[in-house]
Length: 45
Length: 162
Length: 207
Image (cartoon, rainbow over all chains, first blue to last red; front, side):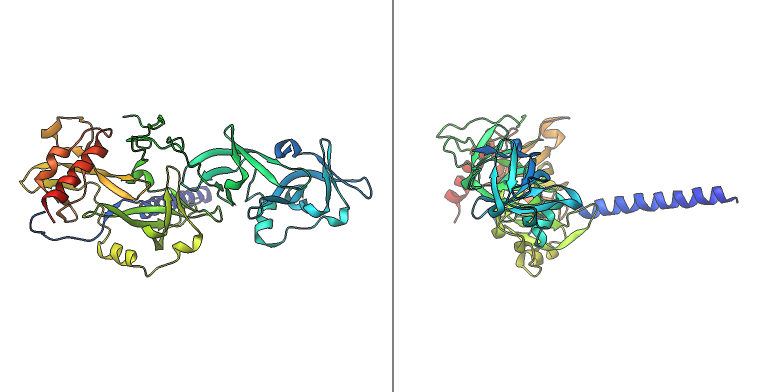
């Protein structure tokens, strides 16, 4: 393959890696609503 | 009584030589005493600070400092960040201690002789200097207005943006 | 239910800022004494039995930086507002070994959003989309649900279900007593009152 194709492939790989990083980091940062104090059955209320 | 925004851009002149040392680009505030404690002359790499004690006067047409020798570099982390622009006064985000943003800091009213801050102006509203809590890299923090009739922005049964 | 208009309160109304937990997630944690943002809110952690906030897990601030080990317990929180969670100073986020951190670890990130809500008489009320918090007291008023289609038909408005007394949380579902059903509301203006009535009923009938 010629040099240009190689460069473009490397560039594409870098972009893909970056996008993957962004996606992973956003998932790691995403927050939710956590219920603490797990409860099993409580008889009646 | 002077407004800081009017003073910005004023030439800073040395009293001993009548030389222009630079332009007024900012002010360093001590929150505990609620005073302006230094003026920033110039910006970027060339920025220097003039302690208020060396300022002979801030008038309508110029700010006068006793001597060019009084200008000094920022000392310590906080002053360096101010000079770099990381800690903004004018234009900074005004946030109450209850967690609500009031807007951008439009102006600061101060006594041009003592450097004492009288009020902050934000979103057309005057905030008494006694409410000032901090000037930091994220926000200027002010105490929320304690209001009897709910004027501090809370509303019954209303949620934030859905 | 466009909540953007601020109404001045009348003296007898309870003026409370109500926020959804998903609105608090992502807000900056700002220190009052320093004016610096020390972290971003990641998860909102609450106690489903008593209906109050226990605190927050945190993300580091900055472009794509990951979660922090430190957590922010509710007693270190000075205030929760529309735009920020306020703490007195940045040292409050440094505690890694706190009870809240243990709590979060043992609940294994049990995110209730998306959980089914079932009554103990076997009725499915809907799925959790959020919790509603009274910001001034860190009190959880109730759940916001996407109502079950049998209750509301398609495209129904969200339902609001008072807390406390979530009987159980499994990780995929919540169990609530059927006694809560009459107190379900579909808009917020009556919700505060419904929560009060529901709690009054609870404390009246049980010890």
